Image (tube, rainbow, N blue to C red; front, side):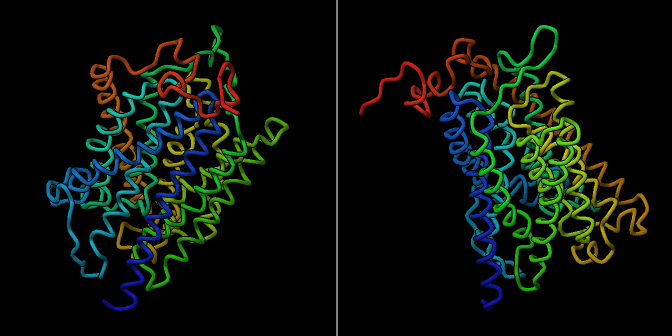
Length: 421
């Protein structure tokens, strides 16, 4: 194996580790965005999500996503154990590990819709079912040689495959679970159930931002041609633009620069550029980030007005921004980069007409519809298996730390807790 091929494999392994470390960002983001009485539960839930999703992906997820099969699903390579080397020199087990981390991220996004009110048993069953029947099938359609891949859908690192899929599952969960106690008043007005630690949330966003270079630039699966640097540049520009746009929008509308909205603007820029980072010019990457960060404030308000309780704003950050990011290549993909990546054609603003835009829109509708309907059905199945999705009112008031795990994440800060000196 040549030195360059070894570097390619090393880069993919490092990228897999970066994507895994993004889970640390999700822990801090979700813990900081929810209330203190649920902090330990949220943190622990994220860790066992990685465990369950990894085992399921090893057993069946990879096979359904990347095995040989048909346009809908893969049907080979269950209980993955291959260590062969591809024609490009990538060791199959290295590729497998990288893709496993993506599957875990999709599940973590999906479980955001369950925050602060779902039973622990609900998480366990739904994570397992989602990891078998939702994410791998969408991944096969776009990345595993399925029908959307055949028609040229562009999604370099997962605005649709990972983020939109996870967000639609989160939407199904929020609808079935209904809002948290005290979120909405009888007149329909909303109360602010503010997260308990904006510093945690900000640090979580920073960790996610760093990890995203593994997510996007790692998806080049190599370093030999240097293209990973271009992808990283586009990623940084979109995230920066999303942050600034969200800050100024909320400042202009409310007179205050709301910190959670600004942080979500950064994430929206990252989600949006995930599909297009390998297909667009840097100026377009910045514009994609501006639009993503600009719409996040209005999206968050719109979901709240619709009485959808989304504690970590997964629907806006991963859903709305995922839709925009997927559409963006239909506008801004350059003919040179479309050819370089061997996928689809130029966007509308580069003389490609509406062809690529139409393919992107079709992909959005297909992925969103499939992920929502199947997740909804799987949650209904979960409900029947565990005797209801949601904890009791008393347990929700106490907090999931105590009711589900027997101890608080912050025992010295919570009332009526005996602690040793």
